[in-house]
Image (tube, rainbow, N blue to C red; front, side, top):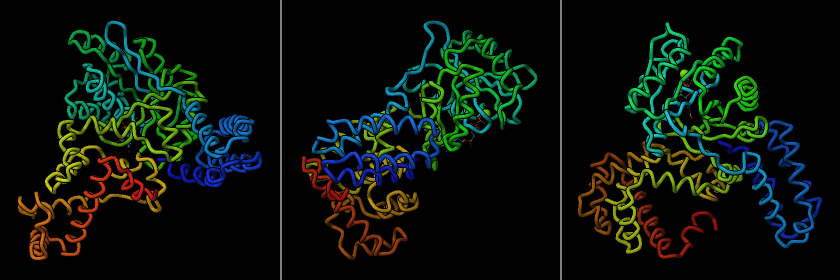
Length: 443
Ligand code: GDP
Ligand code: MG
C-alpha cells in the first residue's frame, strides 16, 4: 500500500534532504509538493489544508532555518504530524470489566466484516488469551451464515447462529446468553451490510446496539475506497457513535487517503488494519509506524513482531550462531525459507525494511512463489553432504543437481553463487560490520 504516496513524498524531500541549511522558499516548495501528493492520495482536502499549514508553520520556525540539517528536521516534522494525524499513539481495544466482552462489527457490504470478525477472534485468542465466540447476525446476504461458519470451523472457534428467520436483535441477545452458558469471554457479532447506506440498515444496527450495549462498535472500512471510506465512516459514526475503525485491504493498491483522513474527520481511532485474506492478516494499528511506512522509512518493529510470532526462537538463535561462525549451510537455507513463507509474502516483508523502497524497481518487486519452489527443488536434489558443505559442489555435481531438479545448469550456478554471497554478507553483518547492509541498500 501507499507506494505512490511514498514515492511522491520522497521526491518532495529529496532536494531538502541534500541541502543542509534551507530557506523559507525551500520549505514552501517542498510543502507544495507534499500538498499535491496528499491530495492525489485521496486525503480529505480539509485535512490536507490543516496538515500543510501546521507543518509549514513549524518548519519555518527559527530553529529549523538556522540549523545545519534543516532538511532532515522538516522530514521529522512531517513524520510527527503524520503520526499525530493518525491518532498519535496506539489505542488498545476495550474489554469488559466483568461478564463477556461484546463487540459489534459494522460496515458496508464487502468491507470485510465477516473476515475481520474471524481475524479478530483469532487475534484475541492468540494474543490476549481470550475464548471468543462468533455470532451470525447477518440474515440478509445469501450464504452469510455459512461464510461465518466456515471461518469459525477453519479457526476452530464456535459460531452461534439461529438461521435467517429470527431478528438480528434476538440472535445477538441469545448469542450473548450462549456465551455466558458456555464460558466464552468475547462475543463478536457479525452484522449485515448494504452496498450503500440506507435507513433500514441503520435502524437495525441501532436496535442491535441498544439491545446488547457493545463494548466496542467496530466500523470496518475498505481502505481501497479512499474518500468514500471517510464519508461512510462519518455516516456510521453519526448514527451509531462507533468506538473504533478497522481498516481493511491495506495489502492492496491503496493510495492512503482513508488511513490518513479517517481519524481526524471522525475523531475515532483506527485500532487494526487488515493486510490480506488470510485469517492471521490483522495487525494492531500504530500511528507512528504507519507514518514511517508512508515516508518510506520501513517498519522494522512490525517486522520483528511478526518474526517473533512465526519464528522459532531457539532456531533463530542457532541460526545466528551459524551465521557468525560461518557454518550456515543449505539445510539452514531451506529451514529459513520455510519460516519466511509462514510470515507472509516476501515483498511485504522487504518493504518493511528501511531503505528498501528506495532501491530502483523495488515498488514493482514481486517474489514469485515459483522461484522459491525452484530454489527448494535445487537444494532438495543435493545430497546431505553437499547441503552441509557447499564447497563440494563441483561442476559435475551441479550438472547432476540440475537434472535432478529439472532446472537448467545456469540456474543452479546462479543460486549457489547467490547463496555464497548472502552467506558472506550475513557473516559480516552478524559480526557487527554493517557494510554488507550498506552495500545492499546502496549505502
Ligand atoms: P463483509 O461483506 O463486510 O462481511 O465482507 P467479507 O468479510 O465477506 O469480505 C469481502 C471480501 O474482502 C472477501 O473476499 C475477503 O476475503 C476480502 N477481504 C477482507 N479483508 C481483507 C484484507 O484485509 N485484505 C484483502 N486483500 N482482502 C480482504
Ligand atoms: Mg459479511
